[in-house]
Image (cartoon, rainbow, N blue to C red; front, side):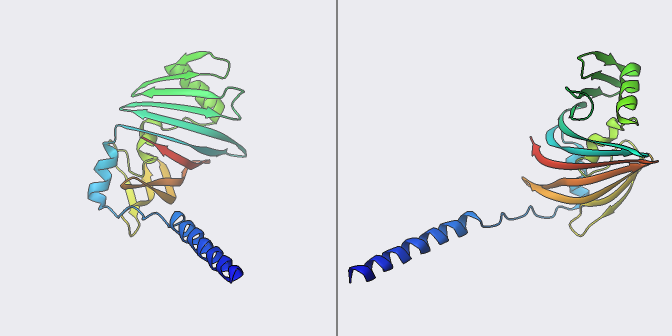
Length: 200
C-alpha cells in the first residue's frame, strides 16, 4: 500500500513538473501585423534605439566578419565594429554630414580623413545617413525608394540610392517586428547583418 501511495505521489509530482515545464516553454504570442501606412512613419520617427549583432562584408574577392554594436540617438549614429579591423576595432560617429572615426590605435579622425579611413578599412563607404532607417525595416524618408512588402506589411525588399536591401527574417520586439537578418548589395559589395538583439 505504501509503495502504491509512493508511486501515486511520484506520478503527481512528475505531472506537476511537466505542467510547469509546459508553461515555461509556451511560445510567446507574435506581435500583430501593423499597416505599412502606420508602420513606416512610426519607425522612421523612432529617435532612439540600439542593436547588437554581426556583419559579414564581401567586396570583390575580399571579405571579413565583425561584431557590431549600434546606438542611435536622434540624428547621431554611433557604431562600434570589433573583429578584423584591428585589436580594438573601429568606432564611428555620424551626425548629418559630420563624421568621426576612432581607429584601433586610438587615433581620432574627422570628416574627409574619417571617410578615407572607412573606405580603406571596409572597402567601400557605408551609407550611414540611410542605413539607420534600413536596419529598422523602412526606407530613408529623404529619398525616393521602391519597396516590396510581405503579407504582414513588412519590407522584403528595398531599393534606394543604388542599394538593394533584402530582408530575410524578422523578430518580435515589443509591439513591432524588427529585422533579424538583412543583406545590403551594391556594385560588387555585399553586407550581411544578423541582429542578435535590439535595445531601447
